[in-house]
Amino acid sequence: MLVYLVIVFPAVSADKGDSIESSKPIENGSSLENDEPLELQDRLESLDSLREIDGVVIDRTMTRLGEEFYSLFAQKLEDQLDELKENISVKERPTALSGSIITVFHRQNIIYRTALSPGRKNIEEKTDQAVSAVKNYVLRWRIERYLKDTFDIDYDEI
Image 1 (tube, rainbow, N blue to C red):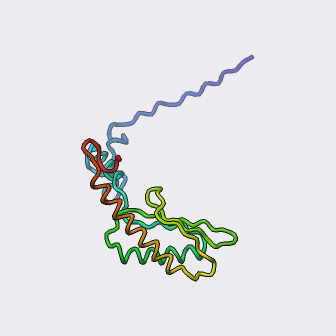
Image 2 (cartoon, rainbow, N blue to C red):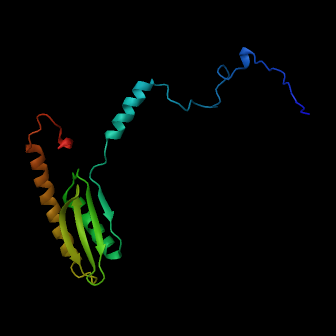
Image 3 (cartoon, rainbow, N blue to C red):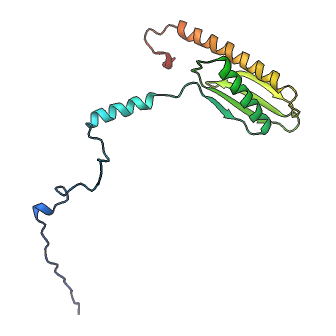
């Protein structure tokens, strides 16, 4: 014998004044959302995604020797190139016997590579060489970039 249990809930009807859409805003202060149209917000977000940070020297060193090279290099580069708009990366590969191999990159192109001994004897000289190499490279790169034929494409599409 099967017994069916049916529970009947009374239908609750909401008045039009109690609906969620017509209730007061939850926020106490100013609105959390912008009142700008969605098309304008989308356009502004797409423009923000195109902006890049320029003139950054990225530290990818691992040891104290690499950090010392990076800090000297970044200071000297900042002193000598006031308007650096290219991003430079300093990468270190520590070795067991010979200290570290330091490589300076711009857009995955190697600008300068050297080996630093653990004794830190010639770190000043190596940073001067690296800054000189970067200055020459950046100057050459800017000239080549401006002299390229960009009739149908923009500079960043090359």
